[in-house]
Length: 421
Ligand SMILES: Cc1cc2nc3c(=O)[nH]c(=O)nc-3n(C[C@H](O)[C@H](O)[C@H](O)COP(=O)(O)O)c2cc1C
Image (cartoon, rainbow, N blue to C red; front, side):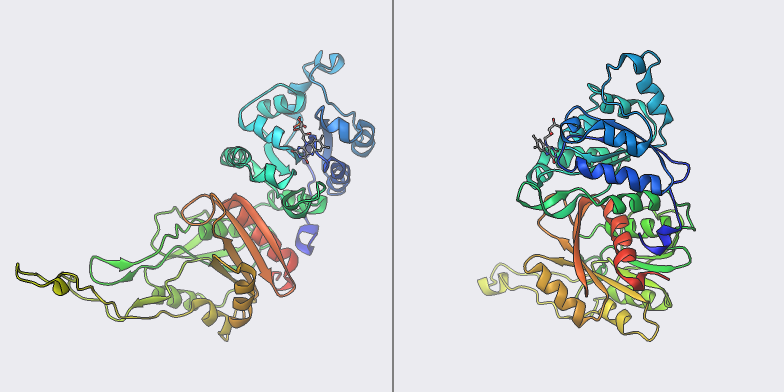
């Protein structure tokens, strides 16, 4: 737990911990300890499948309360125990969340105690999935997760790495400590989070490089990732300035926004916004711009009937020049922010290109969009990132951009001392 989050706790939270049937259920016992260490009150519900992996006695001893696992418990249900439990909770945390429980919740099933509670409760739902990586990547699971996130569920993980089944990939339960950290981070009031007192500058969206009054060179960036980062940084307490390329997105609450169009304008705005503590360059900045912008619309040549094939097929050659490298300029600036993070869209040799960029541009971390992962990247609401820094690397998502943004900031706070004030 980093030093900022250590000061926070889950005091006052009544956490209903749902444990579903997966190998990682054994880690839920440790999670109960960590939640109680963070001052949360915990009650545990085991699914029938979970009870094949772990025993109720362990959870009863660790939580200090009887464990429930059946909807058909005559003593508890005489007083409609499931409704009472659902009302009691300020948060429902399901860890590990099996593919099955995720599917049930996405489709509103209520055929066991845990799924019924989830339909009744108005408490925040948090899911920490754990499953074989193929189960995780299955379109059905991805769609179910997306549905639950759209409804406001908080997603923690899964982590990437070696799995109990002998395979490698995303699907590991996030470690109990990190789950507690994410829960704490999501409850801190604005202005008092782990980024409180820090100035964070984020660039977002595409740039448009004008050819003439009606045409431009642009790209498919929606700006959603950068806007999610600005929103997440504000939620974590930062004083956020967002430099936005041409996008039609609402300004996140509590964020100062500067609209720009061209790469040179974005660069000027970013340099003018210094000093800052953290810079995150999430914008898809054009590498080239027209050497000149025509003042009048560029017209096609008018060809008469007698024009030869060469004239009819003659193309238009654009003279392009390099745009400023905003990331490198900020990293080399005398008022360099303590932490400079670049984004990259890589197609091949992701790790190699990202590490090369890390060194060449002298930045602290590179978040590489995993282009090619279904449902991720440009113009969609989810993303997956590979994050590289001098001492390590990590995989985030696929998850909603809101979730990936929050996870990226927490990762930076956790792993890069320069992210902390
Ligand atoms: C040995 C074993 C390990 C399993 N591990 C997982 C797992 O890690 N994640 C998962 O989603 N399902 C796993 N399953 C399948 C679930 O236990 C199964 O889908 C079950 O119906 C889930 O029920 P629940 O969601 O009500 O807990 C495993 C099954 C077995 C037999």
